[in-house]
Length: 561
Image (cartoon, rainbow, N blue to C red; front, side, top):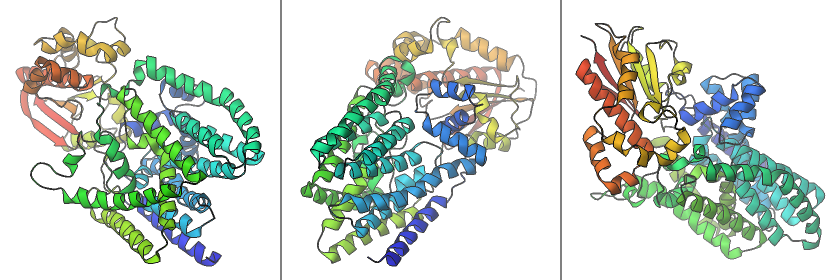
């Protein structure tokens, strides 16, 4: 293909990807928890507070440094923060062109354009190009790292080897479990290198790099995952086999589900017992079917690059799967972002390997038309998905409910300071209090540390959950609400509904059932208990005015009469 025509096609793909990522970029609901924490660390004073905040967090440090520089150069408005993810998101389109072009037995412009097209229209990548999180930059760095790996696979020169080690370091510094990806990638290169003799030099350099870089990073994370309960992810969400399947529909269909916590059953998305969900069935299975056929076709080629792709991808997938079975990590699609460029490569390799030009035109047309139609038309489009946990939502709700300075507000699950970014109308004074997920200490013994609560809470607090009276909660409510409220004042209980999922009656049934109790994440038990107790207590002492719900937020309204 001549350069002018090639540049024209690539430019159109780039503009398409850029345009898709700009749709609804500025989210009115504000940032949700993970985005807020990312911003909070990035804005910490440099250097001491910044690095202290990083050390307290379970994620790798590079993205916070990147975001710190971005904020310094631009601003920390929500729009600017989301642009920090959009920027590497669109650069990834160009990167995937060069990666796709390099991946075949021979350089292929069509293969590069197809890989860039998948990247441009990927619902998963569009979503995270609008999210103030690590995954958009991680995808770009992973694609760059894979590009250097393929170069090294063909020619393990000092230059290529050095670039591979450097980009591997960037991936590990961007993602906490990036070392798993780098490990399998290095093993794959060692096994499948073309020039085995020359590769000894690279192997030696890689071993030195591993001692200096890999072992400390991996060792710290493995220790924290195994022994530090702060990293015990599944205290709030259990493993489900459905997530194994949602991983593939998330990546190769416009229908993304497994963002924070997927439904427990994959087939319930297809058939709910009464009727077929044609939306999911058609828009998930048609693109996934095309991608699967192409990837299987590529596997039959089974050259050294395909072997490298398969071993690296399967290694990461299996390790994350095993870790999730033991409750050490959630099996979420985004946690395996590093292998997504590899799977796109496999898709592109298989697509180009079809000799029938008409078949390729049909497959590409159906894949991209279905994906784009869904993105523009569906309420579940990645650009229309609302961050239902967005922390501007309860602020807007309180303003609509005509909150006054004398009214009392109690936030459950998140600390009250979390909402300051979106409103100065909710003063952080004695009228505003909270019970956050890390300081519900009044339902436990004073000397107990939170790590033990997360680990042994179900066993320790079953008696508390069964009791009708809680002295600590009563004292907390008297101090922060009842002793300060005057006639005509309102008490707003701001409840985060995804964690306080059980009504009082349901909660008692769960506690009485040994099987259900053991199966239910501890976090759901804690905040269902606290919410129910406060509602019952306030209903006895104040006048109940109603409850208002908006997405993941629910506000119970009481008034002193």
